Length: 84
Image (tube, rainbow, N blue to C red; front, side):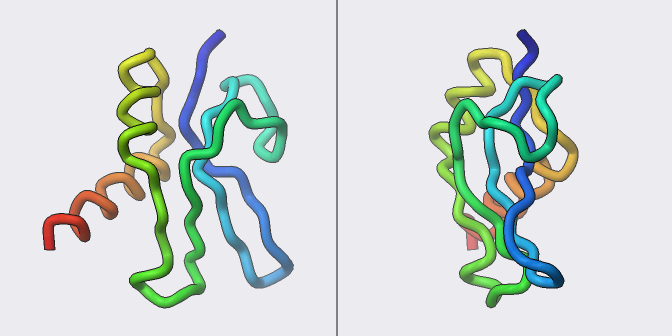
């Protein structure tokens, strides 16, 4: 089974929010997740947009999970804001 860290779309029309989840790569976008790692609300204020458990992300990466491009960009964004 190939496992990916990717986004799961939630929210209402014109008010999207996403959960960062670990899922089977063959599962549909909004299917059942193995584990939730955080969330991303693009329409919120900058400091409240992204909440991510970096320790769990690293744990899953060590287990062999791959990341989607968007999830990787969010992780890099989280790392940049944590250093500031």
